[in-house]
Length: 244
Image (cartoon, rainbow, N blue to C red; front, side, top):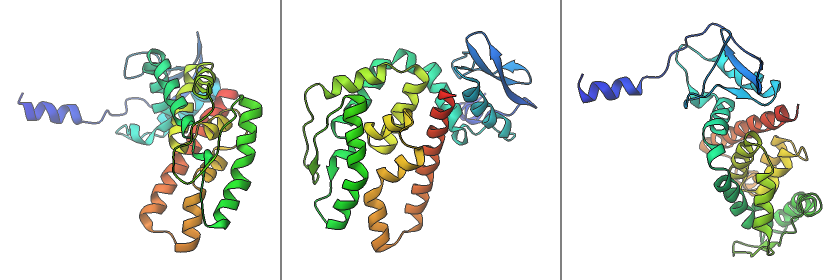
């Protein structure tokens, strides 16, 4: 076989080999079952989730798959793969990444102008910053503009400890939410049920929404916003399923 032919074969998408996908109890949790057999991750580990609701969420994507498997269209499955195959060996690094976001959390950076945007940010973000201090033990400094704002000593350590207190499945989603929102505070708020994923997504783009109200929305920006909103909804469903 030629090198080019070998590459072509490697790039072929996996094909659907099952008729029915569902979830069922197994030792250690709830499995995604394909025609009654436990599905596996790319690393070869059985696809076993901590709650029936999470397993059902993942199985739903396998049931909806076409003849060719498009993992890009299966976000809950990708979260499950990451939580099982990658995060257990990288928990410290994942938690540190969440802590880095907290060091420059989106909610701590208020606009300098116009006054209407500043007021909107204060009304929307200050209650979450107060919640973070009371609920998470995270007093956070605020800044106006884009200049760096140093956070109180111990902030990074506290965020890292909060992240490491989560299991692999919650930690995986927390890290994804932090990156999506640009805010550890918003990510923790969704993880703990303080906000819905849709609310957090809206709060993360107050400035964008304000500018759109003034200048309109182009098609590319609208598509990007829709994709990020869909990603947020998947994370919200994941956290809800972990709790239930």
